[in-house]
Image (cartoon, each protein chain N blue to C red):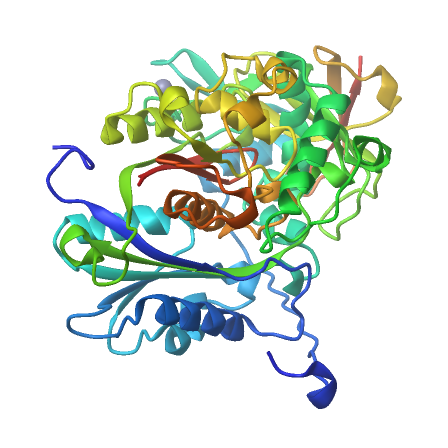
Length: 385
Length: 151
Ligand SMILES: [Zn+2]
């Protein structure tokens, strides 16, 4: 039996997010999490222990926190003492996949997910992502997620016909929407001309094509169908989740094929019983850390044909399919939890609580995330009202 | 949140340094010895998949069979994609600006990112033929290839 078409269902009952900020230097991540926790408790009145939250899934990264066992440092704030607590460090959206499995298995009924990340804390996030490569070849030549994205961007732009002009329009649109989202990091509007005039970081990626350094924290309360109404009148149902990983060595991969994303999307749709995601989704949140990734990931999700990213932008695809009305990752979410921010935005849309960027009567939402260099690993979450 | 002016928050400097040794593996050990001592580049063939991998490895990426054999590949290769890095990080072995390219060596089916030099950036293109420049004093790491340059 596949998840989502069985009898049991899992609900996202409540979500909370901290405003993304370029440098929360005066707050420790524990303090950021406390704000999220108190927000969720105000919304739901949840308690810990038997009959309440019995399990916590935290999301953080040792290298970004500059300590080992990063969850150890936040255990008390999360209420994790004497309870089950596990850390997801692969990529935040997978905490929802994991919590979903915990509840569907009948192991626990109510699970709290809490994620944090301060990209500003280290000297440079590129030093962190350099360690995402193998120690013999990739790290040694100085690869990081940014220059790996540069190598992918050139290849994908050649395949899809995307130009510097398209990228500028993608960034300008992201900022227009971010201005309507009080939680976004970069909220000032940006004309395409200014994007095109920004300096190159790693050609063809310009400074304003890359997501700004961001600090943030996010939380979600999940419950089984039987228990969800204790916490909310508007549950959002998890109907599909899947992930997939491409080859470990960068040079083994076809950088333009969307291999892992296509696999993850197909599996998530199968679980949700959706044949045509393009027709079913009312809102889509993709993790576009760099401008070229928005059309590329949309292609991987099946919203346009292979190599049709430029046409997708020219034909107004992002508006038509209501892509990243939060501003997206381009407007600034920290890595590790940018996928959770996607899920929070998707859930708010389905709850009708997305404020100035609300889509009327949204029934089905897609949240996407990626980690690893140049989209090595992808996750897809399908939510329904 | 607290009134920042009232208590004047403070940050402390943190610095983590950790040197370590990492076994290069069976294939990696042979690869690095051949590179250091003989200026030869080795890849790992999978007879099952009819593919030759670079960097070399002990397990096939596709069929998971054990790879014990190694074959010489290159030294000539082809640029698959490239970028000009114009930002600086302490982990970069070369000062910016520099060119990275994914290079597929002749006889290999996979590429590896390495440096491209002795070429104007405007001349670099996908499909460009390149050859390695070896370091005069080789130490047994991937930087024993200093960079690639056009034929
Ligand atoms: Zn094989």
